[in-house]
Length: 229
Image 1 (cartoon, rainbow, N blue to C red):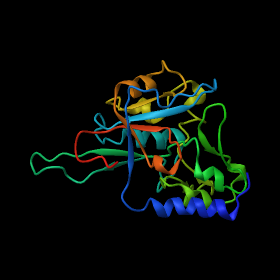
Image 2 (cartoon, one colour):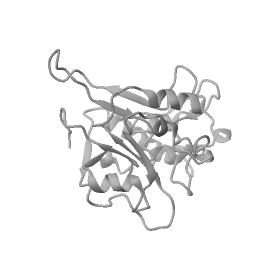
Image 3 (cartoon, rainbow, N blue to C red):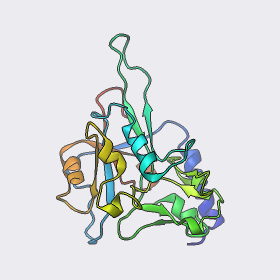
Image 4 (cartoon, one colour):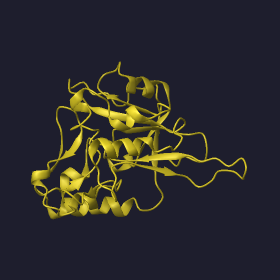
């Protein structure tokens, strides 16, 4: 896919558009809002913010399993400002990582097709041998979760442990390491999968869906603070 000037400007515009107040879209979990009937696998994830305790075991496991160098990360857990007053103050925790968009801006702007969506899994990934380090994908990502790997010198990001745990029949390292089971991973196209059971029975939201990115990272909102819609 060629990287036209128009496509790059559109990608950059997405970044500019989303630097203000973060927006979300709430969805009724009783609908299978994610399922397609094309017969393919579409891996996605749910982060249950009501269960996350901010321990960062997921980030440590991700770094160890995927050999992520110090100074960069594929996954962050962002802690909120204190909610309430001491000694009853509490916090909420947000997962920040690749959303594995079905309509990913990073793919559209890549001039060498290094950024791509794996047709067998729906995972958005990077072909290291094609990456020229132009940085277009980093600029176009509205979630700002891509980075340059200081060792490989190419664009890097979460790949749901596609090259590590998934090849061994395991779940992503973050899912396996979570002590509170706040993360659920599975096939969004399978109506009987655990991930779709969560979507069916909970209110979930996805970030910045107004951009048309179709992210496959769903979140169960906590009951503290405010969800902007």
